[in-house]
Image 1 (spheres, rainbow, N blue to C red):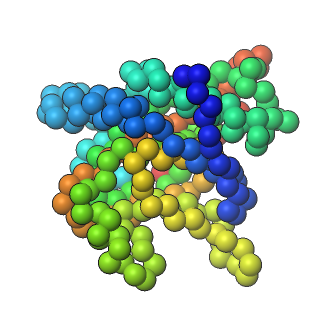
Image 2 (cartoon, helix red, strand yellow):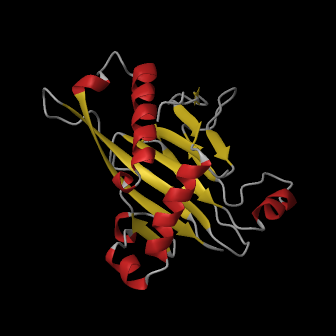
Length: 218
């Protein structure tokens, strides 16, 4: 991957959130891998990841980033940029080991993820599919649209202080954020699948062999 990777860094309420966009060819590769698991009951059962997660979701299966090398390369670059722009004074990417755990979340009408945090230092999610009728359903919610959305909550409500950020899923969009940042996913009603891939990034200082910060899942 020699192309320049573009991204934005947002600080809507303190902690920084990175947004980038994954090329469609990589989205297609991940969907192919996910389809091979989700379409096979035995594989779905063997790779079931739901016991590790907070979601009220029908199918959540493990899928290693290493199975799609181009995706792993892009995420490594983005994580390095995040570290350099956010906490480079605390530790350097070249002195830090990064390991990942990752999984695919396959949601259908009524599924949701309650507010939770993750057990790592950084986390990420990117969107792979939305139901065919999703845009129409979202358009009909003219008052505080939230259907199928990811929401980050960063503080308590206060005057002149933004405490939440609602994100409408767009295929290919990727977000990286501190694992301790509370977030949730709202349910939707449309027929079809809302699919995303989520991952935890574990950072360990090479010299000390210790974790760089720690969150708590759920």
